[in-house]
Length: 461
Image 1: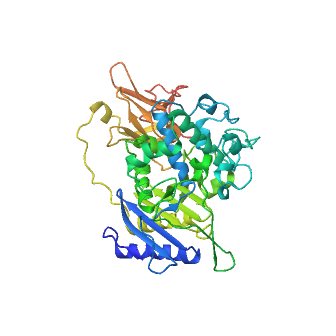
Image 2 (image 1 turned 90 degrees about the vertical axis):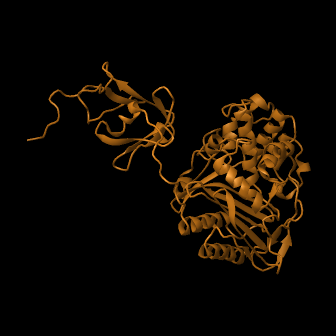
Image 3 (image 1 turned 30 degrees about the horizontal axis):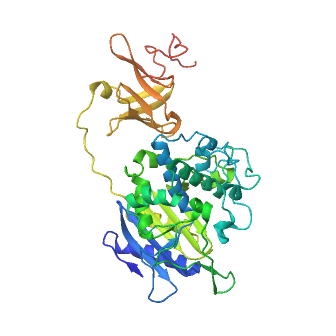
């Protein structure tokens, strides 16, 4: 069962429906629902169910588990953007006495704070949060398993601490702050800490028989910022647009871009698998494209949010079973189906409205030693520098308004690019973080460190 939208071609819609039908059938999920977002809006919704005539729509709530962490990260980044904290601050500065205060806020966001993955027994996802009323109950007597900042180790207690930090600095509950600062501004009216009808029931499916067992639905209490939320494909589709584009009522485009940047050291296996973690977002390289988002699970529910910013495609997949369909793989496949069948049509090229002659004269070929680079002017008023060989260091640079540029990515991120001119005003060379770029390899008329052999280039007889 699917709601047909005219924005996608019939063949694409059928391929999407086929993929979720296979996932629901082979994964033996009581129901599975998905949505595709493109150009800032939902363009397809599909659902499969074991109950005849009752396939869920985009307004039916499912529990989304750890996708909740992305919402908590948004609240923390709002505090940073308002100047109430710095990501390099140790937690102790703002939330003293936890016993885990040596970890920085950034380390907690990126799961490199050295904390344990789970709270002490009993299994927190299947027991009431009232068993852990205080942070000490969540962290236990010895919360650290690893040196702080050294390795990625996913931590639910870490996000519990971040939720408590939000409450401390806002003077209100995590749930209230989330509703006021994120859910209401973005119009996420079907996202809540407690289930609101219509909502799916959570089920366990027997691994060796086609029979079901209802899962308990616990209020996670203190651990709510790590996994409490219920939501819908409709709401998460709107949240995906926000994570790709930003919304100045919540976070700027620059800040959500920061969330999507890798922030955790990768394990050797992670490097091989092409996965890492940002600030509240999972990052993976799959099928030749960079995907960001988050997965979630709690007993009875699975959830996935996957975004390809470059393809302008986002996908939400929700299911009401404890295990079965691999929703991260389903999400990536749905992105691939749309991106390959209906690739993004680029904006029309337009010439620049104006150009500074002193910048235009810098365009063209430059050499760092014997490495050839091309400098190009970009449509946003900056410049880009990339190797002509296709391999090597490359970056875009933002204009600073004083004749200099700051690197935005890669090796040159944050580095200053400036033009060095001779007394007569002609260009001698470019200085990029002390590296000298000249118009000719080792140009004898430029200030090349170490000088240039006066006999010049030569052959060997």
